[in-house]
Amino acid sequence: MDGEPVMPGNSKRQGAVRKKQGGNPTAGSGGRRRRALEGRGPTPKAVEREAHKAHRGNRDGDKRSSGRPDRGRKPTGAAEWVAGRNSVVEALQAGIPVTTLYVAEQIERDDRIREAFRLSADRGVSILEVTRNGLDRMTDRAVHQGIALKVPAYEYADPRDLVVRAVDAAERPLVVALDSITDPRNLGAVVRSAGAFGAHGVVVPERRAAGMTASAWKTSAGAAARVPVAQVTNLTRALVDYQAEGLMVAGLDAEGTVDLADLDFATEPLVLVVGSEGKGLSRLVRQTCDVLVRIPMASATESLNAGVAAGIALYEIDRRRSAR
Image 1 (cartoon, rainbow, N blue to C red):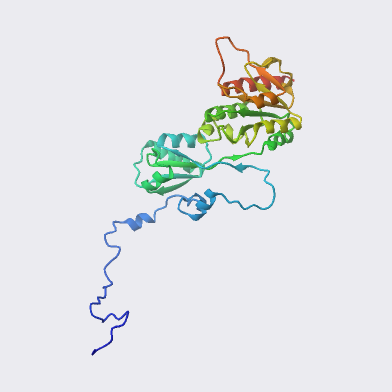
Image 2 (image 1 turned 90 degrees about the vertical axis):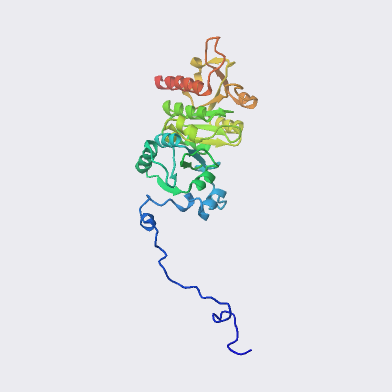
């Protein structure tokens, strides 16, 4: 064949067309480049950005350790989302520990959105703009109304640290333990009462019990930032450990043998155990208690809400201790 041989990459071969380079790739951008340069607040950390591999690694859990036992707080459970304009504003007002506010692109700004931005700025919370589809995926398609907060997993205290906290303050330990309390609002109410009446912490079981969710944080009215909550795998064993450290264990029970006002242990190192409103204390927990205490009530009232019962008992214990 005459002429130049056809070789790969030879633009002169038959049928080859060289695309022209030219034109203005930014023409008609409508100012998008200028808007892209506008500030959107501080950039969230890598572990807070959904698409970043550091976030995925943090989500799956880093199982590497330094070789030393962890006696401090430990994160348990998964992160939680607070979605919706009213819920987000209420969570920010309640002081729930969040680091990032997620906002859908081109969201219509009303008073609640502006208030969420203002509260985030006051608390140093990063604001990250994402697509609406992205926010759907993050919140598992909750009704987010274009805005959501990510609440990191709560860092539970070690149950032994609650006693250490009291000793360091030269105070008689007072710990509240919850048995089968499944409503996070009850947990939040107990944490609030614990903070009001001088308890050094709250203990909850790891399974079949409420944890420190956003709902519990809001109900605590800020007390969750001051009162540590410890989580244990076995509540009965934790009570036995407290007894070994010299604490008495008093369980609230409608059929208790001692009236709350007659509880001599109130002024001693004490664990107050509160059961669920329906079932009360579980069998093993009841057997572990040193004494079962009742709150005298009118016969027409069968039982008290767990949060209310804990508040009454903690008030009486604090009154007895203050009078001593």
